[in-house]
Length: 476
Image (cartoon, rainbow, N blue to C red):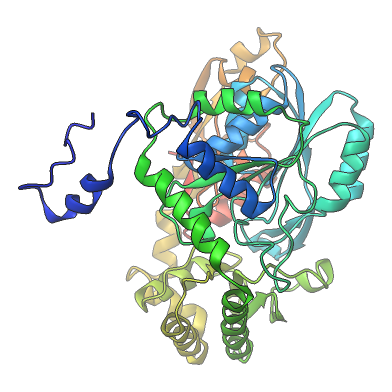
């Protein structure tokens, strides 16, 4: 193996560079699951760059790292303190390990009927939760968040370590942090015990490439390696592993001038965007015309420099704005009713920033912007869009009431997922118990999880998302 034998003769041009470099575990090329040679050395280079005790290559993305981190840190049937706004991979780890969950909700900016923006978790919320439940075996946070907001990692880590509780951080969007004073410190620098980073999200690396770092010995490296061998493929791609190593080498050679140049480009872009008269902007350089209510909720909160939040004038037509921008040649990372999310990295060009600014300036000048946005998106009127997405047309997986009454098992996520289920109209599911996950993707944070009661508030949230065109997974 591989079957192409690295023979590029007669193959499609697309495959030539791929096949030339695609190898497998032959003598001299090491084994990711028991690294002793070149892969061990490559992982050591990654650890040196980030200041970790030990680093592991991930070729199944941050998902594999999150699964392994939680599995290694918390024993089966144990209890984890989990930030509610966590990626679905964290919930899958909870399900696989049959864990009990206590939630952290964090600070939030209220955007009215369009939803809320998560701003991170502070020490006091963690302290209250830990003191209320002595069974907590680990704390799992997402920092920076998908939107670029950070939790109080340093304070939380210091407190948890007095309790000998490990802090696990999903920093999938933070592989670029800590290399410049213009950026926040990385979760690893701030004392987290296990940190997962997607190098492909914010650094020059291909999709699926990521790293898991150990910052201490509170979670044994042997257990992490054991679970990585379970959750990752037994035939890891050498193309992806070489790409991680190349990315590490490239970043290690960058001096402060590279990061400063990126920051200065971002600053110029921000100055231009903050001059918009109708469209609102929230980034590390300040805020303008954000939705009513969020000013008081988060007067001093700003995302890290790689993220920009864009708000339509009414604060609730973000999905339409995202679709309109796509037609103008600007692909957004995510569009929700409340806002559009943009990701900026060192790979962005001045040309790209100009195209973004010109598109937003064009939108900003449009009369009756909300109406114009709706008419530009998919050629349908607002009334037709809402009719096509009636909440009554959606169905959700719920536990059968008879099966629920006859089963004494506590409703953990894992327990609920094993009980008899049925489908019913979401509009009539108030008071029933969810049998599956319902989430908006991206970012993949569940609105409903198995074992959770379906409330009127949850249905109202889903109604808004559906009517505004958000991609909701888990409904039929």
